[in-house]
Image (cartoon, rainbow, N blue to C red; front, side):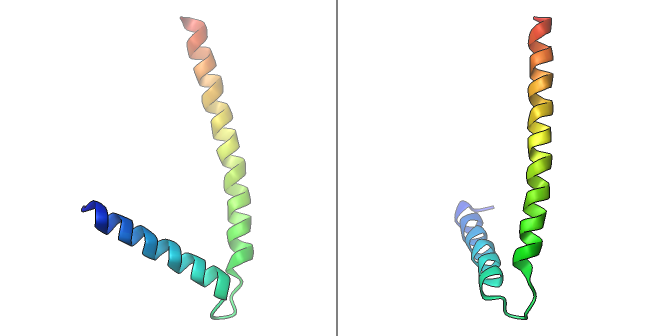
Length: 63
Protein backbone atom coordinates (compact mmCIF):
# COMPACT_ATOMS: atom_id res chain seq x y z
CA UNK A 1 0.00 0.00 0.00
CA UNK A 2 1.15 3.53 -0.65
CA UNK A 3 2.83 5.14 2.36
CA UNK A 4 0.72 8.30 2.03
CA UNK A 5 -2.51 6.29 2.04
CA UNK A 6 -1.32 4.43 5.14
CA UNK A 7 -0.54 7.70 6.93
CA UNK A 8 -3.88 9.20 5.88
CA UNK A 9 -5.84 6.13 7.03
CA UNK A 10 -3.96 6.13 10.32
CA UNK A 11 -4.83 9.78 10.90
CA UNK A 12 -8.49 9.18 10.02
CA UNK A 13 -8.76 6.24 12.43
CA UNK A 14 -6.91 8.08 15.18
CA UNK A 15 -8.98 11.26 14.85
CA UNK A 16 -12.21 9.26 14.62
CA UNK A 17 -11.46 7.32 17.78
CA UNK A 18 -10.49 10.47 19.67
CA UNK A 19 -13.64 12.24 18.48
CA UNK A 20 -15.91 9.40 19.59
CA UNK A 21 -14.15 9.23 22.96
CA UNK A 22 -14.07 12.98 23.57
CA UNK A 23 -17.45 14.11 22.25
CA UNK A 24 -19.50 11.07 23.34
CA UNK A 25 -22.10 11.48 20.55
CA UNK A 26 -24.63 8.80 21.50
CA UNK A 27 -24.38 8.94 25.28
CA UNK A 28 -22.23 5.81 25.38
CA UNK A 29 -19.34 5.94 27.77
CA UNK A 30 -16.42 4.71 25.66
CA UNK A 31 -13.86 6.33 27.95
CA UNK A 32 -14.41 3.93 30.87
CA UNK A 33 -14.39 0.87 28.63
CA UNK A 34 -11.23 2.01 26.85
CA UNK A 35 -9.48 2.73 30.15
CA UNK A 36 -10.43 -0.67 31.56
CA UNK A 37 -9.21 -2.40 28.39
CA UNK A 38 -5.95 -0.41 28.51
CA UNK A 39 -5.30 -1.31 32.15
CA UNK A 40 -5.86 -5.00 31.43
CA UNK A 41 -3.68 -4.85 28.34
CA UNK A 42 -0.96 -3.06 30.27
CA UNK A 43 -0.80 -5.91 32.80
CA UNK A 44 -0.47 -8.50 30.02
CA UNK A 45 2.18 -6.37 28.32
CA UNK A 46 4.29 -6.27 31.50
CA UNK A 47 3.86 -10.02 31.98
CA UNK A 48 4.99 -10.72 28.40
CA UNK A 49 7.99 -8.40 28.72
CA UNK A 50 8.99 -10.24 31.91
CA UNK A 51 8.62 -13.58 30.16
CA UNK A 52 10.75 -12.41 27.23
CA UNK A 53 13.46 -11.12 29.57
CA UNK A 54 13.54 -14.45 31.43
CA UNK A 55 13.84 -16.33 28.12
CA UNK A 56 16.68 -14.05 27.01
CA UNK A 57 18.45 -14.59 30.33
CA UNK A 58 18.16 -18.37 30.04
CA UNK A 59 19.46 -18.16 26.49
CA UNK A 60 22.46 -16.15 27.66
CA UNK A 61 23.22 -18.74 30.38
CA UNK A 62 23.66 -21.42 27.70
CA UNK A 63 26.43 -19.42 25.98
